[in-house]
Image: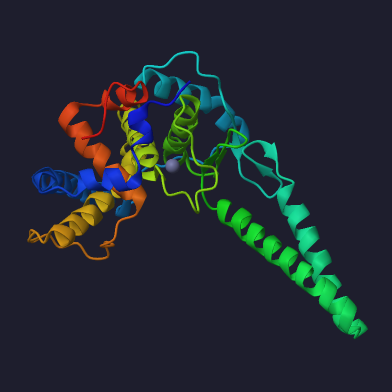
Length: 307
Ligand SMILES: [Zn+2]
């Protein structure tokens, strides 16, 4: 499927421009107060030990629950016939249900080149040493960087567009269930042609705000659906907390950038420079409040543009 032009234009910079608008302030303040209250209530319940997050789901239980999460998301986004992606927990040897060979290979290469450097040092042969030192140093550097990357990915859920698989972290039921909805939404975004730049580092046209704001909106919808269906507010704990922090952080940022006097809201520990994720979350929240939850489906079909 060919990506719609408006999606290609939805770069972080363009969407930041939409957020940095004085007209958003009133609505952000109203949303901020609403989510602040919701967050305080749910936090109080948690402190009293009244939130029931349930047990950690086994691999088998994850396989059982994933189809119903997928069905809820497909239904919400008005999609049919979307193939099921590969998914699974992250472990030392497995990532998203796929065998993860990278860690042993990287470790092996790094160890071999490190030993080679030591060997050259001990040989005291200046010519041999110089010839192999820099190539070994390079391989060791690549190995360490890759190991860091693999290790970092162990602490988060993610969708990997190159292999089209979803990797999840084992967690308690109410914390885990919204996460596959988020990652599965990234899979759908890729499927309908939003195309993630697989190497994000040097890409000037990053669309993190768009992709993350959209995925977090769907995640939030699923958390609410489960909370209502099972009459359990624990499902809402993470999404409410995240929405509140995002709104507060973006509010500070807009007020600072546009020189607007902040309302007297006491928010300690909120970063004044929001990430692209949080900007995306707030932009979708504003649009959802104004135009309804249908936007999550319409934007995928090119029928809605963020305003
Ligand atoms: Zn994401």
